[in-house]
Length: 230
Image (cartoon, rainbow, N blue to C red):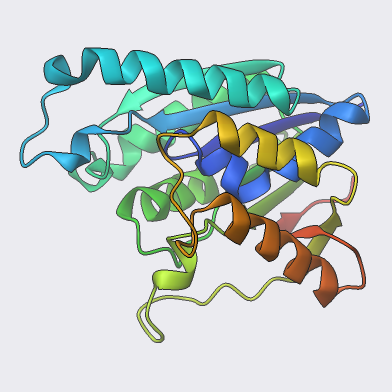
């Protein structure tokens, strides 16, 4: 039995990036924890004002709870960093929050964002997780760190602007793809219509394409950041 921690920027990123794997871990008896660091929604305004979105937040966080329940998450945490403004926070402050999560949960495996995403929050969280999981002696309970792709962000980064997403780690999700898509349906206000990259149809195609990369019906793809064999 493993402890799994998914660290994502916004509500829906966790399911977009590794919802099928989350469900697979849960079905195998692993304890899956989900931490969403940024609040969502407020970046749509010229200035951040949480007070005008109280009802929107209720709907979004209710959707997050439902989506995470669908894939079998044991505990969901919502931290409330400013949406798409995490570069206004010092990296150290984000690292400290990630370190608290790691110290409390003591995960064996962490899934988080790839660095080469167009979204600044994804980049900041990637850097924070890499820093927080540095292999300090006597602190080796995090055995694996994996980076996922986020539809409508990773593929939009232009060549040469950042490290490309070139996966070297694939997980078969043939038996949990439907749960992933059902969880995405819970995020109805965040999803878009086909042919948008963040549509149910696109995510279904992506899973099947990643599966075809390695001879499965469906898969999720990752970059292995670090693996420690005890």
